[in-house]
Amino acid sequence: MTKKALITGVTGQDGSYLADLLLDKGYEVHGVIRRASISNIGRLAHLSAALDAEEPRLHLHYGDLTDGSRLIALLQQIQPDEVYHLAAQSDVRLSFDQPEFTGDVTGMGTTRILEAIRLIKLDCRFYQASSSEMFGSAPPPQKESTPLWPRSPYGAAKTYAYWVARNYREAHSMFVANGILFNHESPRRGKAFVTRKITHAVAQIKAGYDRKLYMGNLDSVRDWGYAKEYVEAMWLMLQADEPSDYVIATGTAYTVKDFVEQAFGHAGLDWQKYVRFNDRYLRPTEVDSLIGDASKAAVELGWKPKTLMPELVSLMVEADLKTVLAQLSE
Ligand code: NAP
Ligand code: G4F
Image 1 (spheres, rainbow, N blue to C red):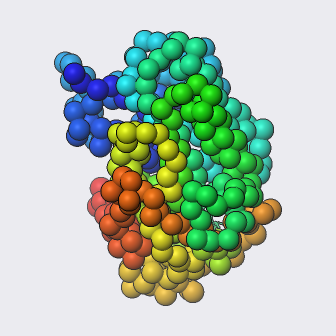
Image 2 (image 1 turned 90 degrees about the horizontal axis):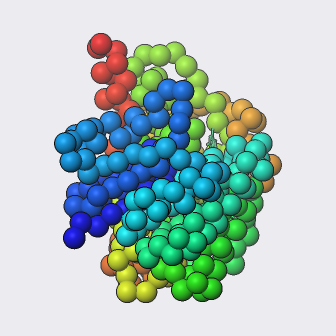
């Protein structure tokens, strides 16, 4: 029997890699997309064959995390075996400007979809996209038992969603897993996040555009992994015998400044000539240091990271260079 998966946030970085993975594994994949005035399915463009086939294996449905009755209708209609709940307002800086909206989408959105599953008595496995942002100011290394101390409305909303997910597991005996993922990046990362903002700017500067790169806090420490590998961990969590919560991380630590230096260095550029400070990129409260301990995932799921930060920087700069050079030659 072909397994069916539903992905919320299928148009995002992780959703697009997860769709690739599940289609490769033979799943029928359903994704929830939002109506937008221009196309928001660019990250799925390479999957048009699966979408437009006579018997499509990828199906896209309009829906929104703020629209609970639509979630019920979609779950009822699709009857997925696995639900990967990735959709969220995922921008930490923006969550300080739109705390109520972030709470509604990133926090309550999880309750809406879990309650929809419970109400229609759907027998499925559920993945909740939890975040290392929940650890906030808790000192590293952070693991599953580390107390949560969120430092932004986004971190607080994810913390609420994490506990709601655990409560549905405990109260209603549902198969619910929290993946507590540390920062993961790729050429598909949105350009507002720091890594892709940097690699995109490096490619533009290398291609001859005369520009500066304005940035905020260069001292924060992050544990950056490769998104393509992190979605494999999501799938593994839903194949386990018992549902549980797992940290997914590389265990390596670099500052934002390290990332800047390596990205400019990869393109043969001196970052100090181009990078400038702008306080609009600072946050009212910062998360200083996130470094994950993913040993539980290694032991119980057999998951280990392969791509570490230096290789990740290279592959992201190379991808942005290729895109900008192709645009120049058009
Ligand atoms: P992303 O690229 O920002 O994608 C977010 C997705 O959510 C997009 O598909 C977006 O749709 C969708 N979405 C936003 N608001 C929605 C709404 N109201 N209704 C329906 N869909 C909505 O995020 P990502 O990096 O792939 O991350 C996936 C998930 O993991 C998120 O929950 C994020 O918070 C979490 N997470 C990410 C990381 C990381 O380092 N990447 C680490 C830990 C946890 P549009 O395309 O229409 O905007
Ligand atoms: O790339 P960032 O915006 O990612 P952040 O805040 O760590 O959040 C990401 O990872 C979380 C997992 O830990 C996810 F849950 C969340 O959804 C998102 O994917 O910023 C990284 C660091 C921060 O310390 C920030 O202050 O980079 C610093 N930074 C410095 N200058 C900047 C900039 N961040 C951005 N976005 N833009 C800047 O110009």
